[in-house]
Amino acid sequence: MVPDYPLEDALSSLRNSGLILFPTDTIWSIGTDAKDPVAILRLLRLYHLVESPQPVEILVDSLEMLKQYVPGLHPKLETLLLYHVQPLAIQVTNMDRLPVQLRDADVPVAFRLVQDNYCRQLIQAFGGPIASMFATFDGTRLPAHFGNINSDVVTSADLVVGLDVPAQKSGQPSVMIRLSPDDELEFLRE
Image (cartoon, rainbow, N blue to C red; front, side, top):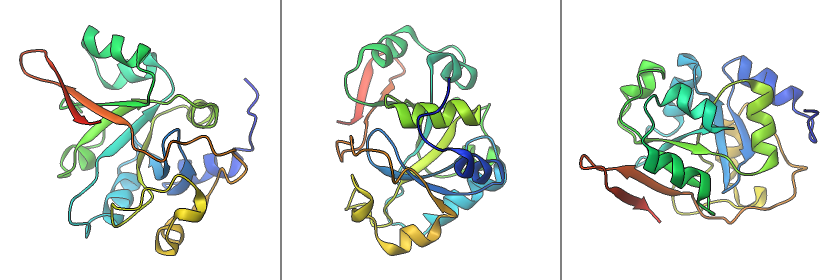
């Protein structure tokens, strides 16, 4: 697949433990290589002073990629991921295939199957998942557009990408769910 957007700078930054500020299919986020322990530490350190830590969303481009990191994905979750209209993140507890720095962090971790072309192309070209957190340090202003992002967030990223991507975001975070111990769906964020 030939990318619709130039991705070389973003890929270079991701491959070098960089933090990119980029549009997702929900809101603008800061992201990095989900498999790189140094990159994960850099991402988590950005948010260490935030009073209520936001979740880290691991963005994947396909169900196949998700299953590489979430073995034994429950059929209820798989079905919901495939047919849910809004972006949907599934909170997981089994994170054995992610860096220990993320597993030991005191933040929720959820996986999200991206829905828009830009994110999908970025993840496919990178060849792996991207760990992301909202591009806000106060948790109140969720940026649907680049112009809504505080300058302290912008300057904390190594690179800003996707400015040429048409705005298609809802300005709302993804719906977040998890499976209860008795295999019932629990909605954590609607």
